[in-house]
Image 1 (tube, chains in turn green, cyan):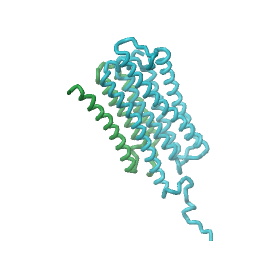
Image 2: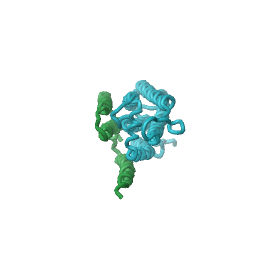
Image 3: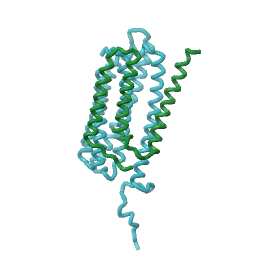
Image 4: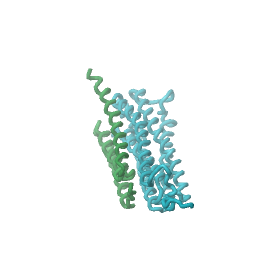
Length: 95
Length: 225
């Protein structure tokens, strides 16, 4: 892995974006959107997660494919846990 | 007689004998760290799944509970953690460039942000437990509908933020350990894997909070505090 060294300016840009998204998510949490308050908040949280993972954790610059496989497998496992658990609870009233 | 192999002369002292090159060693270490972080996703994932199921079943109680979160402390703590992630990322960069003093300073600031986070969390816990009697158990008090369901909300709140705070505490210890060795001149452009991996852990714990913040503080548009 040839080391990727980010510039100072780039790191600060990522951080400013993260702070702006935090201010945004705090501000829109005052809107009365009913069940969509949490949907909007989670969409913004996922944007923040991607900024941290891709640039601070350097996922974007990982050259070793096996490491990418590990990360994708972990996220896919989380998807199975959350999605298949919910199919049970959501479908119970249908019977 | 004592002809040493030419490789010895250029051998990096930080290269373990079971790796062929530094690149291979770093790749293996970083992948190992990611495998560990996946086990952490599994650990927190169980609690996130439990949260989701009860949020689905106790919809109204979750809104009630969320209205009793300290909205401003939670928001400030999110900003504090994001700042600590910036200084951590900058510390890894400084190590890669062999800037010893900057590395130690940036790691020190990261520790201070981490401690600030834990201090604010302690203020919040004090308010919930001592002032408002919201810790689940025999002492739990809640005026309103479905107190037992709101109690479940607070069980998730204390379990998830508590385990997150424990991870922060461990993270502060790890950063202090790395800062000490960085100060001793252990790391540099030739070898910085430990700094990189502690950085990965720190950012991971930050990501957990990025999700805990909306799930506990932002699900209701009413903020009582």
